[in-house]
Length: 474
Image 1 (tube, rainbow, N blue to C red):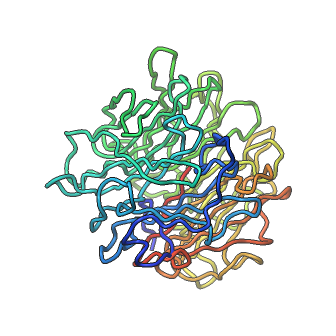
Image 2 (image 1 turned 45 degrees about the vertical axis):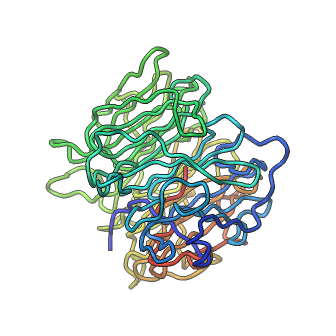
Image 3 (image 1 turned 60 degrees about the vertical axis):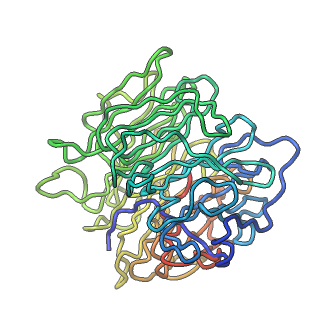
């Protein structure tokens, strides 16, 4: 199938819940003092998983979109501890409309400084007045009972129809002032909203960059200065592999550094060599061809190591693909290795590891069934040594390989049970036609299939095609 993910997610709840809005089922109550952790929406000290389902039907409205939050605990996540939010939920601005794609993009962070993480949600084709497909960004507020209510970020008046404003979002402190900021892609300019934010969604300031039509964003601290850098990969004429640059705060302004030898459409940031600097991992999932001679058959990833001013453009990056020594499988046309990436320490050794999705991987007669490979960090950087690969035919992983499951369409490494090891959350966006996630718990030897958790769109009562797990909040 090989359709490029557009960031979606869904789950199973009752039709009445989706029509009426908020569904909170056994959401754990928070401690008196919220944890302040990004992604901990109820402040109980356990990070949660927010999954987008932009194709979910809301009542009788098709493809309006929904967001499902699975709450973390000492035993991980289950379908029963969840909240489902749509634009018909109480306190959420707007209304569920056909094709809004609410939940197309997601990012977590504490925008109002109350210690509870909030969730930023993109509705890629939200209609604004009589303009169709403009797009919008909604902030859902965290609290002791989890996410509830929300506000819309200021809507630029110059947005065109069907421009996809909100296609990509990221949260980070981009200017090292202690407040979380938000960046939004889509349309012909990239937006930056500086915190702190009021509960009406008003930022301290709002600016834009004339980068052209960008739809992805990667954020993380690449130079150890406390301010997150922003990377906006996008295609340009004359550079078929994509243009990559990063924007860093100098103390008074933002400076842009180009990486002319870098290619890719997706990415993540993590300290894979333990030197204290975040490293930029880029996914170049496309196969080489006449119009794009670079890359590797089946896809590859590259690691650009951070430093005092960020990644040095002159460095030789680490390149890993399925023909690298130690990496299971082999590069085949259409694997899409590198189409989804996430960084986190899955084995607790102090080095960030990287989960790599290849949702176009064929296994046996099953086409596009998908795999996820976990690559381990080390003092010498990311390596293929000891890499582990997972599919739905891996012993202990729920389900089985089926054509077009797209296992690995999205990946997320996050410690959900607070044991110091990141758990692997895998999205299979086409599972049974509506999507599912699988959670493998982190362990000293890497993700373990023992006690694996499977949650489908129907398990959380989502209706329609749902596109559940096309987006998982970073």
